[in-house]
Amino acid sequence: MSTLPKDARIYVAGHRGLVGSAIVRNLRAKGCTTIIERTHAELDLTDQKAVDAFFAAEKPDYVFLAAAKVGGIHANNAYPAEFIRDNLAIQTNIIHAAHIHKVQRLLFLGSSCIYPKLAPQPMKEEHLLTGALEATNRPYALAKIAGIEMCWAYNRQYGTQFLAAMPTNLYGPGDNYHPDNSHVIPALIRKFHEAKASGAPTVTVWGTGTPRREFLYSDDMADACVYLMSLAEAPYTALLGQDRNDGLAPLVNIGVGHDLSIRELAEAVAKTVGFTGSLTFDTTKPDGTMRKLMDVSRMTAIGWQASTSFEDGLKSAYADFQANVIQKP
Ligand SMILES: NC(=O)C1=CN([C@@H]2O[C@H](COP(=O)(O)OP(=O)(O)OC[C@H]3O[C@@H](n4cnc5c(N)ncnc54)[C@H](OP(=O)(O)O)[C@@H]3O)[C@@H](O)[C@H]2O)C=CC1
Ligand SMILES: C[C@H]1O[C@H](OP(=O)(O)OP(=O)(O)OC[C@H]2O[C@@H](n3cnc4c(=O)[nH]c(N)nc43)[C@H](O)[C@@H]2O)[C@@H](O)[C@@H](O)C1=O
Image (cartoon, rainbow, N blue to C red; front, side, top):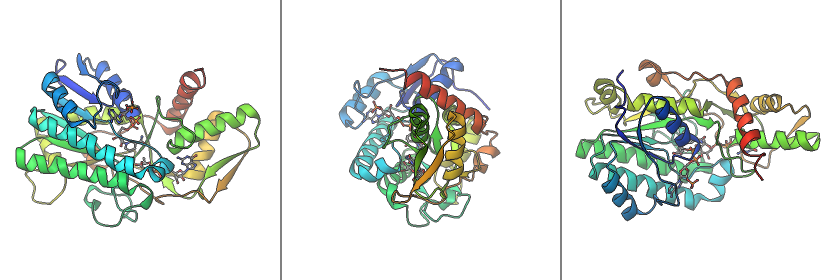
């Protein structure tokens, strides 16, 4: 295991997001001194010319591609055009500029929803493109699949070293707590907190409560990303797979390797928040994929595993909500 040179020029795209902010924390803790950041207002990553000019000026050595149009099941369903358009544009602009401006390594973040709706469980990297996708997030998933293929194509044609990491569902400090557009954990934190505060007797959970999800804490996700970017040459190129003839994309799953039902999740969030009322399930809302458990054996084989317990992760996510969301005017 080698490390990122402390003086390397490291661009974290999406540095104010859930994952990007955790990557910046991780890099700073490891002593990296030259972290390049741009807000959305400073650099619109869908603008190809602006992205190229930025790479020409800043010349990053390493790129974490954690900027994307992101949201939960409702947002994906409600804004499908934005999810495919923004994600295709952001990732195309950054991956191409990274090639032109000779970035040493790039880590592209996808999502577990790239795998078929009915993929065997746990889902392995080789299950990519073996079946139909889940309808609620197909535009987003197809953009992410195009990003993986683009990393692979550039590696083959131009000899770049671009790797794609597929995280499971994430949560943690700085999450999006929007009541409708967020993912399930921040949504439930808000719902249970507001119900407790108002004395409401019941909280409505979307869907049947039977789908299963796997959750990874954002600081663990960031640690996995930095671990991958810090790998010595041989294990890194082994993940890229350029020397193999097995037809596998430069792809690695990141997760915890176990899941729970949405009902069990809701009960855990209620306990964390201290809500003692009942749950109601709104079955007019979509369940989405019934199960998407990651096979994380590629990460464990290279010596990485998540370290935050679900109980601790939920506690710190709720603490973040209390400190940074409800305290704000
Ligand atoms: N959260 C999750 O559960 C999961 C996330 N992922 C993936 O992980 C990555 C990070 O996600 P996450 O941190 O949760 O997302 P967030 O929404 O928290 O952060 C995304 C970041 O990208 C920035 N961004 C979006 N569009 C643009 C743009 N056009 N120009 C410049 N910046 C832009 C956002 O800035 P601004 O807010 O100002 O627009 C924000 O800082 C993404 O690739 C996502 O697909 C994968 C699986 C699960
Ligand atoms: C990370 C992943 O995120 C999205 O997929 P998803 O896993 O289905 O995301 P979700 O977190 O929004 O929901 C998980 C489950 O939870 C249920 N659920 C209950 N109650 C609430 C609720 O109040 N809010 C939400 N959002 N969901 C709820 C909900 O019905 C579903 O069964 C993708 O679009 C895609 O973007 C992607 O990659």
